[in-house]
Image 1 (cartoon, chains in turn red, cyan):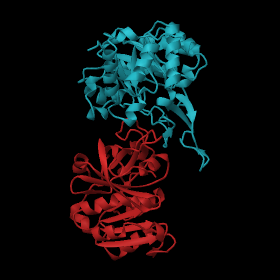
Image 2: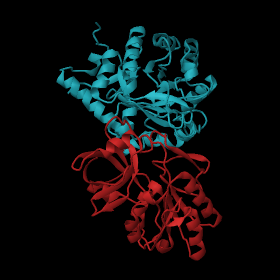
Image 3: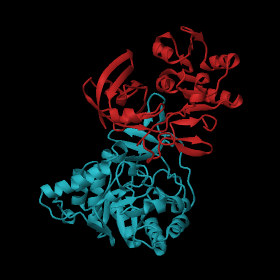
Image 4: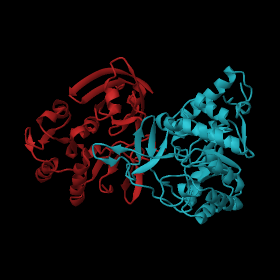
Length: 248
Length: 302
């Protein structure tokens, strides 16, 4: 589907915040789903980028980091230009509105983006933990603050917020209050550690995985991960999986 | 409107467009984008006698105008296919081609027997570069091609297409070997064996290190090979390798292919198959060619 880029911001040196007009996709989009974007330039394949927000029922927002040729070309698009987007694709997070106030969202680095839409969709405002490398990498604090009942930020070097890992904050949160469900997206080691804590304490953990992807619709079977002893497609069976079943 | 029907080894396709095995699964995913009955034939993902887990990820790497893949023939096995997928596929008015793979000649014979006459055609996959045993090892040796073709043909209840590997020095020799073994048709090319290295990590991008190259990057190699095979044998040819537009497909037909498969292009554009079909038809109409079969092999060499 061809969508018009209506808003473009650059919150960090290598990070771009795009909003596209696309009522059909916006209507269907669920938190945790992704868009498969034709970036232009020499990039042959589409790039999967998670949906960060849906606004006014017709706009889709996605944020991405420039990492290679594809995202570099995408970042060069100008407001008013069109972008070829397939989506929304994949299964999003399973929501449990009844427990939303005790839900905990944990994001790391550029994995925080899909959690904003999730925080808004959960119904009751959840608790949110965000982890970053350092103060310079911290972003979207105001938006997450507005969408959560409590926002905790950790940095690896202690230059902002809590000095330590998101898992330290998770343990604190479990000691001081109830955690009904954990939703997480971020670096693999972080998600693996959270999935282990969840297993230990019998808390369901939903993880959003990433893998090098082809078609995005489940046919080419390239973006597989091991789940419960079998290969699952990140694009079609995921990208959200039960953390207890993923073999990281 | 030009006539689009083609006849491949006695099987009539309503148009000359099929799918490249392994890019289309068993059709369920793309049926959400277009009706499978729109295609001349659907060539299914490789099937083996027993389920195969395939290779670990990463299984795909982007390259200039193409991709490398190392899926490794992951499939649920013929039995599960026959039970869960075939009844669903049968609702469509299109021909079904089962792509058969194995590690030994006995495996290939077994899967051909299991499939019986449940589909319209078989495609013998002796050209996959992503498996340790079988696959390309069979498809790069003329004697082996003849032997395996003969043995599978002996138990095949439907026409047998042999899919050739481009990773050979003389493609015509391989085509003649398949013909001598009793192949009813040929398809080419499978992927070109390749490798991509991440210079930051100094490791290959694919977990399996090497993989099969497909996409527009391989098209000139594929067109050349189709032409050479056309000169060597009389069998029907299904041409493939980087076809993205109707004009790409016309190139293959001119080189001598009787039909074409679209594969990697569909990974980028889920409507690629239908678009290519429509663009072939538009080319024929614009050039006042009444029947698609009339341009097969009509390239005029210098």
